[in-house]
Length: 444
Image (cartoon, rainbow, N blue to C red; front, side, top):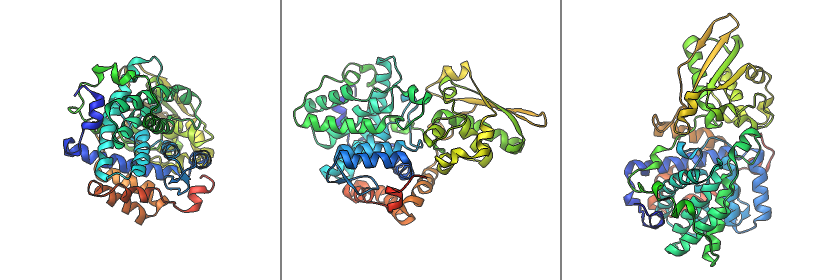
């Protein structure tokens, strides 16, 4: 189907292949787990306080319980997910579809009291819509913008479907979202990592606002990426991009994850300890080299670093959320090893980006021995995806400490049966408060 606006409303759950249905469920579970994991960050605390104060309304916020409007809920949830850089992504987009899509669909679907099946249809449609909207935008602008930019249009598409708009109102919603979407330059945050991150929450909020405005009669200019980029939409309904999402085993930028795999492979093969390392050389893509933050002082800087997570992995065998917390950035041993890392871009890695993110690593020991890796890709790319069991284990690793095992298990069980239930059976669990120290206390 080459008509994206018709696709917004015509796709049904029965049209979605079984493998894609299963992936929609796993992607939602992954996003919910990452949201739970992000709740303890300062960023999540700040944005939830802001949404409650500035976007007052009757809808409880994700895992918080305090009231906000649908736009405030979407903003707070999107930024809380983005606070922990562990959510799924789409290589051609150089970004993340689910992070702006899910919060907006949750807010509008819960408010409209839709069925679980209707919600799942909106999410399935949104992954396909967002994949193509992202590529269309990258093809029409010179700057590399954050996920929130094209994510706003994707969020508006989900809302237009959930609220049953006709074609003309849908066009206005998409046009408003594209026009007002956050065209924020991603590499500014790479060079200067702060809480603005990938703009996903702002995109979710903009998408919800666009839907509400269009519903009230507010008009928008046609969305160029949707209506004037037909070459990017021709395979709708034939190619299922939800099956092409990558997932993150580590809560750091995807561009740092190939170097992590290469370094861990060398350590596993040759059996050296981190204390024996004299120097580490990483060759990778330009964007990964730009993650030049060897000694971060905040979790945002740690998540947008290549050297610091590689040092963590070599010292601890993996990278977990507590390893990149604000407090963890002060670890003397990690800082010391991170300073031994030297980054260089390589033409081979640049040539295959964004469809692949590759790196190779050379490690020299104090004994004089040097070991060099082959080229590595990040773990859990769609070409070698995680199993369902691995993604479920990741969800529980993130969610259980925050929500409690029983609450997390109930969310997982409800999501598995959601097509037969009202959305409220899931959203009521997601929008209730967890313990006060997590929702309102100081961040780790």
